[in-house]
Length: 102
Image (cartoon, rainbow, N blue to C red; front, side, top):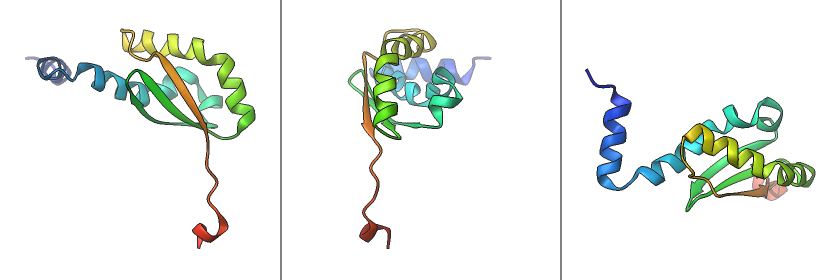
């Protein structure tokens, strides 16, 4: 009996969606790759065209993650078993205006 994951992988390859599928897997494995401390200050939003977009708590964390970016990219791609993520874009978390909260 074939595993469902093997069937999905084959269908995705046949439809030419493997890269897009693997990019989205990068979002799902973010927590496994970065660890608890970074996970608490970040939120992966989406991946597209080899770029992973991640929301960051503040500018201090954005700066720190900038230094860690090459290592995180390597770990993500190792986990994905292919060179899928080429860059990570860090965005500072937007704090809603008081009027929007109401």
